[in-house]
Amino acid sequence: MKQEIASDRALEPGRLVELLGRQVNECSDVIAVTDDLTVESHMRACDLGRGEVGIQIVQSWTASSGSSGSTRFAYIGRGHILIVLTLTAEDLGGSCEHGVFDHAAAAAVAKIAR
View 1 (cartoon, rainbow, N blue to C red):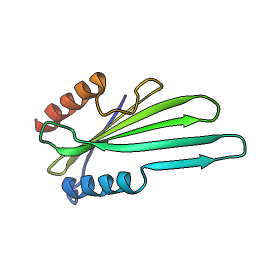
View 2 (cartoon, rainbow, N blue to C red):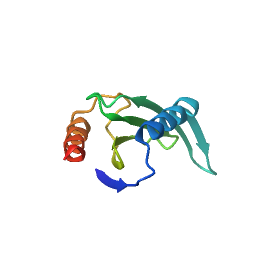
View 3 (cartoon, rainbow, N blue to C red):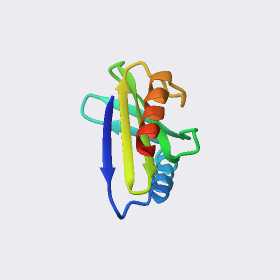
View 4 (cartoon, one colour):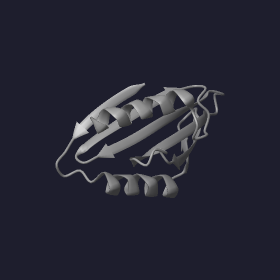
């Protein structure tokens, strides 16, 4: 799990969430091919739930080598502050629900509210 906090006077969290959502919708399925490996990736956008300005993105992938995994991102904004959470593991799956990540996002929402 990785957490980054940024503050930027020009930040408009609502606009950032809109652009990230559009990117996920327009580039949801990607195939990358190298000399000896093919990776298929699928992204989906999920609500954070708690009425906060933000978005959760789930990216799951499978490689031709047989390995697979998932990365979850949460972008949570309030005013000029943005918290980005990233969780990468092999067994997260591609659904929006994941207990550990949801608890970390809730803690980030509480932190940004202070």
